[in-house]
Image (cartoon, rainbow, N blue to C red; front, side):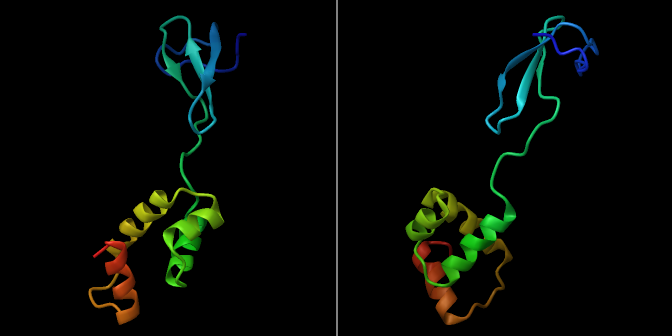
Length: 109
């Protein structure tokens, strides 16, 4: 099935462009029959929205465990642990005792 309005980014041909599956994010892949280049004309970003990440952070600060947060948000608990580890770079050097204890239990500091 040819897609005449799309041009190859490598050879700039508009003919003989065929659908070639999808990316992990769900974007359509295209293959150029002239140069065999595979490309995505309109890529979608992979990953979770910042809103979901902040919601997980707030739930963790409210005392939920990583597994409980994972069940609530339907996200793997290890993904949430990775987010928490990434957010430690933004923490101030001195933390309140309760947050410091929680971070220590999670192995973040």
